[in-house]
Length: 482
Ligand code: FES
Image (tube, rainbow, N blue to C red; front, top):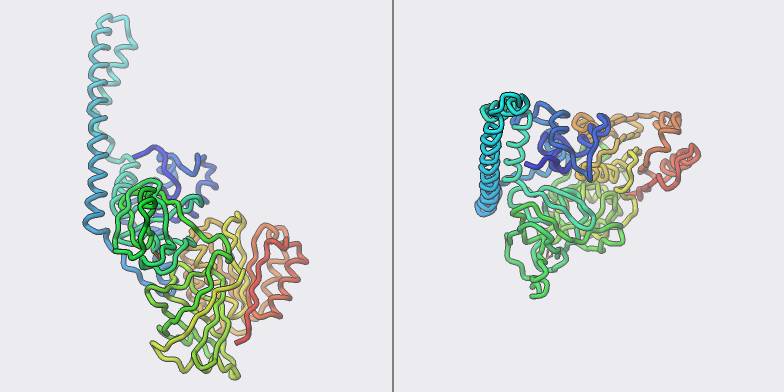
């Protein structure tokens, strides 16, 4: 095991999110070098890391798994072939380590022998001292309570069960588990990778393997040219990682990189969490998923000339299962039409569009202010930030007129419970801005995301800007009436 570990791997080994580890490193004043931490520093920070603990990492994963449209993902074992390849690689490393150990043993024996010869002169006290020390060290078995032991075991298990993937030129990283394709694992980790069909036909997910070993997991119709094959190009939707891998791949950096799409989806289910709110769950076909960025909107058509523009409330990391929050008034024809939908009914989705997007490059913490159903695009962005494991502080102010308008109150509380850097502030019939405006210094250090009906958003924007929030740190989303 190396003396330094990349933070991404170190966090996984001690069972916490990368964001939490970054905060601990910052708080304890520990030095890192090029995104790596010394193993000894990691052990000092987390001296007790039992293998079987129900760690925070597991808790966060659990929350995320259930938060993201209740998508329950099987944690599949890697295939036998991939497991065999990984175990063989570990075997090669073990053999190399044994060879080194044997060499060191020989060197030590030689040193001992020579020192003993030189030490026959009784005046050479230091030589005797050194001899004594070498003898003692060689006789001593490794300490059973070596705090690095669990870390080494964790690292070995991790290397068998998951592969680490790094994307160039962005330096984004993610873990690939089981038999996931590189594309699925990357999208699930919150990366806006380039793709289309997800089934090996369009070629849009083409990427170049810079290092590491990948394996084809399904046939693809798209034909890579001989030149592309020679340059190590692969299709991410059709390959998995056998070892840790570095890829060169395209990622969307703005809404302009996301194509306009039209997808015929099916109703998966409809929930009614309160009297005036419907949650519409749609599912895309397996081979035509919706590419979008968190916070964007689409147009929904129900096929009877009824339609509406709605923000997507789910995370782009779950691109097949789309969620929409539909506020209902008694005059809303769209709401009435959705109310009559049944499981399996078709709904056409067109889009996406919108610039209410997370500033992923910002080091500032985020304040989310959601008025009523403005929670929908905010939820998508928060879940995306969670998938990316952003370390920055997140505060959610959900402002409603009546208690039952906090229609996903328990979900927000579960985020607050599970994530160290997330704070939930529900506000019923109260001016939440007062708290924020009372500390303008703090406000100016944050990015503010504001969503809701037009009058509330415009008035809040005006007050925030008047309090000194730089305009570049404010993003807003005005909901279209449905
Ligand atoms: S996404 Fe179309 S070939 Fe991979």
